[in-house]
Every structure is written in structure tokens, then in C-alpha cells.
Picture 1 (tube, rainbow, N blue to C red):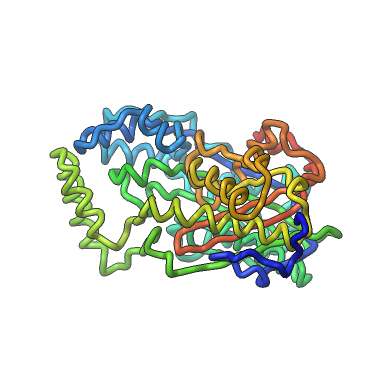
Picture 2 (cartoon, rainbow, N blue to C red):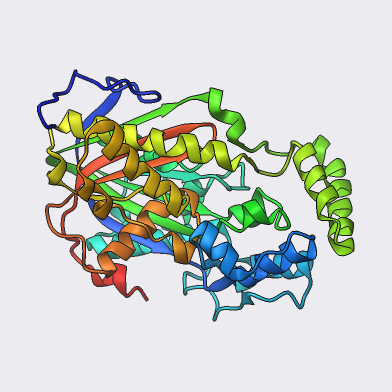
Length: 424
């Protein structure tokens, strides 16, 4: 890139550039699903005000860049139960999309239900049949089914045989880890057609609704990618730095924690009802199991750099000029993080100022969907008519732990674009 070749690396903080995958892989199917319930900023403004730290809906939108989140009916019910049945900003949708007879009721719409819909849409977009799939790779930050996994249950629901179904569990960069697993499976010729699925419900599953500074950032949804071998190179890289783990982490509660968690939840509810936000926040910070913990300042400082390095390293491996990258579609963690990543590419790695125009940001209407975010952003990019045949696109992500990575590939027109833009 611009007279700097692979092997001549900047002084990266996170990425080890030599550890990457180059594989001949093509993306031929794409699907996403967003549940129909909506939470607006009015809901979290109501909670913050009740807890003695008043914010308006406009305040929250200005700070987060977020206006709405899509969630399931069961999540809306949880919000009403915890914040009060009269809490504003909770909008019921018409119900979930229609899926097969093994699905559950709208109130119990599961992560698997959402993943199946996304997978069906990806298959339809590629004009392929589920029977052709020979590997399923899943990823989730909020899967509450230890086993069978989402990948295994999607395999069953699609009527597939006893093929490989592998699940990656972790934070938001599991999507780039899954891309790399898919690429390596295809490169090894152990599969011909791989389905990658993700599904997320972080707000009800791994955080406390009343911890509004964190819970207000997240939505729910699912995504699916269909990949096959091709004659075209793609590039994937991932890394991990547990030294940064305390900035964003989550510990799964064990059986021994359940009684203590119930007592803590009851205390938090009592403090909310009394409007004692200071003590409520102290308890949330003190209790280390069962709820996501995030240091926003540290995440903002480290996450953009990890993604910027991932993008820069892969473009150097591919020998691409800056202008050849049409789109940078990052994990939609936060609009400020996306902008900061662009600034780092420009200021630290020599990318031109036009890089800012290539950043894709659809965080405003969905929130942080963790591992379902990149696919959702790609669908919106297609909906806007901005993604074209042959475009190079970089798909970086960063997540708690801290894990990070990127997939660099060309986009090729889908056989049935209408299945993506106007799904049944």
C-alpha cells in the first residue's frame, strides 16, 4: 500500500500481522433478522431519571448516536417487569417472522428461532438448498443454551444430517473468528458449502436492564452467511489480548451463584423502586458474576485501534491501494468507535481523508448486535444501493476479552437480492 509492502509493518499494538489466513472463498448468501419489538431512548431516560441521574431521550441520542433498538417480545416484558408496566419507550411489534412449525410462540421467540430465519434468508439469497450445506459454524455472545448449541439446533431445524456443527462463544469479535474458521474449513476441502450463523440477545441474557449506561447500547437480532470455495483470494486475521479483559468482561453464573444472584436482583429492584441510584450502581459494580461489566473509556481507547490495525494489516497482505477498498463495515459497537477507527487509519497508518466516507454506520437504529452486527450493516448497505459487484470490503470487529479481527473480501452480486431486501 502506497510503497509499503507486506513484511514492512507499522508498530502495531495488537495485531501480529504474520498470523493470518489467505483462502479462496466467496460469500454467496446473506441473511439477517431483527425482531419487531422496539425500545426507544425514552425508556432509558425514564430509568436514569428514576435513579436520580436524569437524562432526556435527546441526551442519550447525542451521547450514544442511538435512537432505537429491535428486541423480542419477551425482552419488552422483562423491561416492563423491572422498570414498571407504565415505563415509556417500549413498543410492541406485530410478532416474529413466520418460520416452521417447530418454532415457539412470539413471547418465547428464541435465539435459535432468529438464527433459523436468518439462515433461510441467506439460502434464499443464494438460490441454494439447505441440503447442500455440509458444515455449520455458529457464534454468539449471549447464547444461554450450553448444549445443544445454536449451531447444532439450527442444523436440526434446517433438516440437515449429522454434519459438523461448531459453536464459538465469546464477545463481539466471534464473528471475525467464525469467518476465519469458515475460510480454513473451506481451504482444507473438508466442506464445500458452509453456513455461518449468529444470534444475540445480550440485553436480557448477560446484563441488567436497570444498568442503563450499558443496557441502553444493545439490541437483538441474528445473521447468516453462506460461503463456498472460489478462485478468488480473501484474507482473515484475528487476535486476542487478555490484558485488556477487565475493560469489558462477563462471567457466566454457575449453580452456586443462583441464590446469591436472586438476592442481589431483589435488592437492586428495591433500590430502583426507592430511586436510590447511587447504591444500585455500587451493587452492580461490586457483584462480579452474572452481569456484563464495561469500562467505556477503556473500550473507546482500545477497541478502535485493534480494528484499525486489523484492517490495515489485511490490506497490506492483499497489496491493495487505499482507494481500492470501497467499504469498511465494522462491528457496530458505537458510532464514536467507528469514527475513531477511521481517524486512526488516517492519522497513524497513512490512509487518506476519504477513508471516513467508506465507514459504514447503522448503529443508530439497531444498537450493538454483537456478532449479528456486520451482516445487519451489510444488508442496510445493500438496501441503500451502495454495495456493488467487485467491491473490496473490510469487515473488522472487536469484542470483550479482548478479541479482535477482520475479514477482507470482494462482494459479488447475490443471485436473489430480493430475498435480502424484502424477505417474507
